[in-house]
Amino acid sequence: MDIYRSLRAVSQASGPEAIDWEAVREAAHAATVPGSIALEQSDEQGYRDDVRAARAGVRSVSGIDFDLPPTFQVHNRHHWIDANIETFERMLAPIAERQSVIVPDVARVLNTGSMTVTVSFLARHVLGQYDPLLLTDEPDHGLYFVHPNVSHVADELELPFPRFRRWIAFHEVAHAAEFGAAPWLPTQLESHLHDMMDALAGGRIDRTTFRELDATMTAVEGYAELLMDEAFDQRYDDLRDRIEQRRRNQGPLGSLMRRLLGLSIKRRQYERGKAFFEAVRDERGIEATARVWDDPENLPRWDEYDTPGQWIARVDP
Image (cartoon, rainbow, N blue to C red; front, side, top):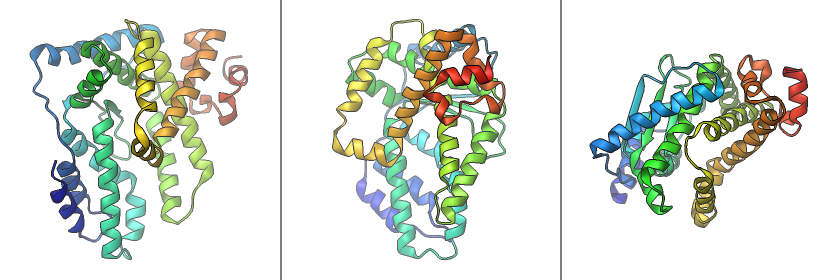
């Protein structure tokens, strides 16, 4: 870690846009210890075996026939930064384009510094990622594991690394199943993101679109949690308990960063969505939960998450 080099890169941010993305990349690299991906052969094979087992388990439980992404990589933290810089740039493009003609140098430095903090924090905390490559013409999806983070959290929680690694693989592969079952889902998410960013670029918050995006992501996260639990071939209660305890003990700075980055919203999406799909499963069986991906109109409406019976009556009467 080289904080001086990171600060220098941010302070020298330049160019016509509101954020100097190359400066963000350099500064985030300097501020983040990459971690090692010098894997033992057994660990490298372990990731592949876990992904294959997860695909078989998720397909068996869900009945969804889906393929794994063609891109499967074990990353260090710098690799994750490089893989996601373009995603952030695409997502914030409407704001950057609106500001680029008027943004002063000081604002550009502040914007670049804020993105550096965001990217660096996430690079140190993301364990795995299913990337549908939104807001791009690229047809491929990606599946990544940030090995130094997976290894660190397993050690911190005193969990066997192979078991924890496998648990993470089942969660990310569950996301692959969702996007395989719903080819319309990337377009739906892209539309929401475009509308939200256009509104922010115009200096307003589109609360309707935000709620629609929140409702969609609650389905995405909640269904993945349900499939993960149903398909995982080992005990997992202690894994959830220790992860939750770690979250509660993260300290004031970690809590602040999670709130600022919306990670507390993501946690609520996990919990609310999982409770909804568990209620549907208990009422109609797990096959009925997959109806959510048959059509965009089948996504639960905001209030239906609290009253799953209404969704069942509407979608699976």
